[in-house]
Amino acid sequence: MSRSTLLAPVALLVVAMVSIQSGASLAKQLFPVLGAEGTTTLRLVLSAIILSLVMQPWRAKLDLRKCRALIAYGLALGCMNLLFYMSLQHIALGIAVALEFTGPLTLALLSSRRPLDFLWVILAITGLWMLLPTDATQNAIDPLGAALALGAGACWSLYIIFGQKAGAEHGRHTVALGTWVAVLLVLPIGIWHTGSNLLNIDLLPIALAVAVLSSALPYSLEMIALTRLPARTFSILMSLEPAVAALCGLIFLGERLLWGQWLAVGAIIIASVGAAATIKPKS
Image (tube, rainbow, N blue to C red):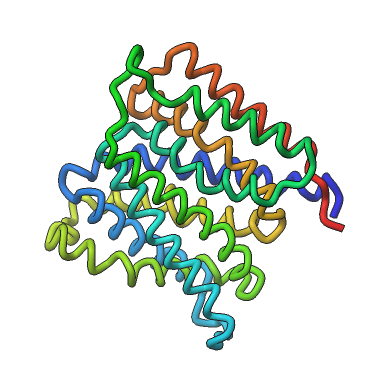
């Protein structure tokens, strides 16, 4: 695979990150009525419906052996979404994404081999550390919110691993099928927590926008990228996510960053660009 061929999945991954963080900013408007659990449920249900209409997953040829990776992918997807939204009830978007990123970053460290790979990972870690709040500049991190974000990060790693396997087996049907698995996991939690508010028609326009921006569009694009990039490369490139979250927080939520935090964003962007520029193509 040539480097020019790799540019397309990298570009799709960037679009997916912008979309998902814009959707996360919008989703916080639903929290007062639905809570994190209800918002996650409504988002996944609507996303599954949209993806099914587009991807036609009923045409997929399934058997028990091939479904194992798919089920694991869907469960990881559901847990990742639920834990991340729950963390947003306690900590800011940029901080939540920074902590969540420890999952794919750990995956990148475990699979790195060349010294140059570690350079980009170390630079990304430096940027993430600079994004964390200090007593001198911001409030301390809520322990529960931090734990939820770290849990979402662990699920993110599993999402990458099993998503790549499931995508190789099921192709274009993977995201829709995996999202339905996630719905089966999260729906009982959402109903128990939110009840009839899930059927509030007035919330449908915002919920649809969140579903498209946070799930249907980015997960489809990520699946294309996952099947064309090594898991290590995908993980390192995702270091751009906290920077995108910080920018979306500024634009949509009015969360202004200090100069040190902007330096952190710059370090993460450089790490991502460096990783993309030094990708070792698959033979």
